[in-house]
Length: 221
Ligand SMILES: C[S@@+](CC[C@H](N)C(=O)[O-])C[C@H]1O[C@@H](n2cnc3c(N)ncnc32)[C@H](O)[C@@H]1O
Image 1 (tube, rainbow, N blue to C red):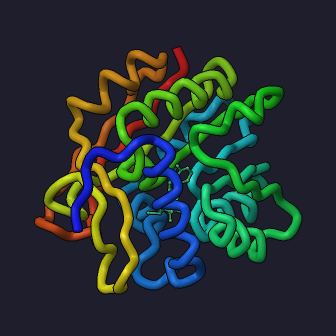
Image 2: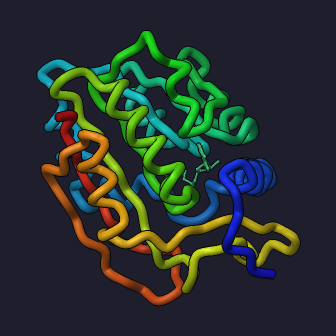
């Protein structure tokens, strides 16, 4: 089955259901966080934060390994995800932190808060361009001046964009988008998120196990 013209609400709901089913199983395999840590991307992001900045927002936290890392190092991290199951798993690892069921286009609910750093690791391959633009605008509004946004994504999990079977799990369909840099860079610039560091992607055909994803550090402008 392959559907490509899905409206925004359908994209969100299909992905919520899919990740709810995956839940704790998502931690199987190499966590995405280890990959960006190994590549030096993570440390560069932390070093780029405003001096002393420790207030962080993890968007699409999944099972929360990145938030746990920050929590242990004394950062004050708010973790959000569309999937209640993912948030439940993340919260079980960090009982004293804030873990919220909140989609990437609902971040305006945090309107009174500002962050030194916001990051989204392997989220935007699940959003169409309209949703990405809404998400980027909200990130911009939630950053302090001088705050940084780390964006990590890949586009080689499936050969095309669409609604398709996830891995080997039967009846588990998910929406993936194959975004290129030409799609994403203009949206970053348009929403006032200026790229200041960039890592390119090594393409492994049809493989989600990328060892070098696309990554940007952006500054609020
Ligand atoms: C590939 S996983 C990445 C998880 C985590 N960032 C990591 O690096 O391990 C994608 C995550 O995005 C979440 N997600 C999908 N669509 C979302 C949306 N519209 N808003 C927020 N989270 C979303 C899923 O629930 C899932 O936890």
